Length: 139
Image (cartoon, rainbow, N blue to C red; front, top):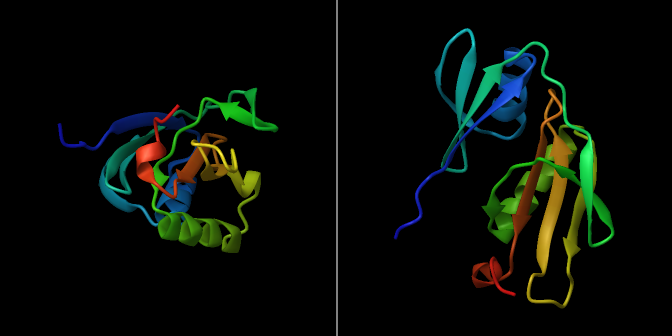
């Protein structure tokens, strides 16, 4: 089966801040929108920021390779060049990394470049890249 785009809807406390972050910082093209939601193209996937003025981030994490990984989180597996470009773009925008860009599981089958940061509403995002995409689900 050919890989299809996923759809993910999530709460944000401010649509204009979401527009600036997802559109401006991450470079996501904007699709349809209303006064209560905005569609964005996140590397070919449809994400939808829905207005919830009371939205608050969840403060749970799990230890992964020596880092406290926020749960829940979402993101995309990119190519190494796209991951490097995004890391540079996020850093240039002054976005604080929750987990700075680095390579985890070095020398193991699951070796991957990863980074975590939050949007203005506190939603955690992870972007990662593998030297070999075949290792995405390798054990």
